[in-house]
Length: 155
Image (cartoon, rainbow, N blue to C red; front, side):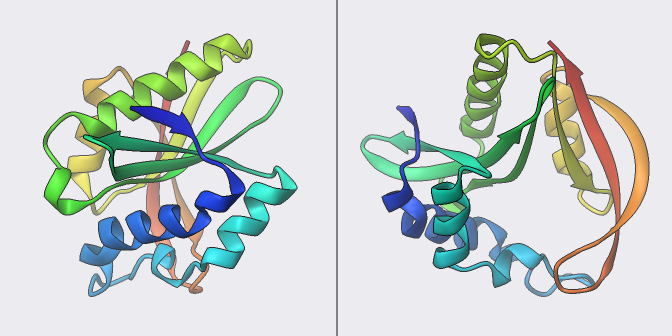
């Protein structure tokens, strides 16, 4: 089951995200996702500056993704699946849900940024129709410069 998250789900979103991003704690450039707090997620949901969805397998929350929209596109970030639930197509189900959401809201594209150092994530997005867009360096919340690629899909 997939559903939009409520403000009260911020703790759950945070827990899933930390579990999913733990593998990047010791990376050369650690993920700034590991520094996010329940209150920062809760505040973004409360202000409406972002939305999130949750994925449940047999009633257990195992995945989430956060997103925001503008006039023409949906940008998603922090796509998270807990390690013990990976390789079951959960990320692809969430991406399909986001694409349907974007279509229902009259948007024409969906996109994200991916670290160039994680080619498995680039391959995941390519497997569901995303194209590699521009490469760019971004400074993450920890102040590190990260080489990324924009993954885009027209809908």
